[in-house]
Length: 217
Image 1 (spheres, rainbow, N blue to C red):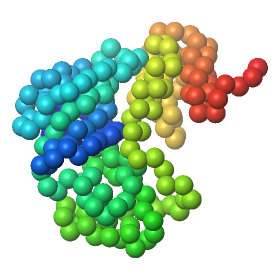
Image 2 (image 1 turned 90 degrees about the horizontal axis):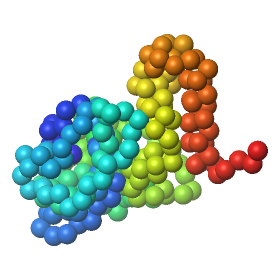
Image 3 (image 1 turned 90 degrees about the vertical axis):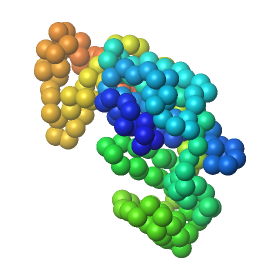
Image 4 (image 1 turned 180 degrees about the horizontal axis):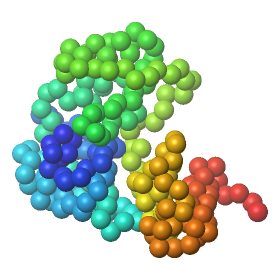
């Protein structure tokens, strides 16, 4: 993931969606790669030793510049591999994503002692560990594959909805406090403010419909 990040210009995030161990340090990995610019994954992988492309599919976005790709690769992961450290402690990896030069990991453990064992192993092996938060849940959560959610969401939205959401997100419309207003968004897109409002509300409603199910009118 770190080598991919170095090779791709304007990378936003690289998420490990799924993986299977083969043998001798070789893993089959499914990744969702998001970048501000278009990139050629075959050219990128050609620059990285011990990695080969198995499959690639593009996820549609509202921007001609932005690029999201879901790729399956065979990778020779040298020790220590963060996923291997987690699995050896019998914890469930819920999310592993690289963004802003930091690997963020979400895991589920049976209890605090098991969590401390994972944390100690990561600290000892990788030399750095920062605890962001801890929650107690009855359900363990699904192992990885959250990147599939991105693919499902964008396939259910129109190009106009994707475009308005992407620009609004990038420009800080959803930040608290907001960095851009609907009026400013309308000016940037060269459309009426009422159209911006309508597209945003329609896109947000579509997203909520995917989460909560279709709402009867």
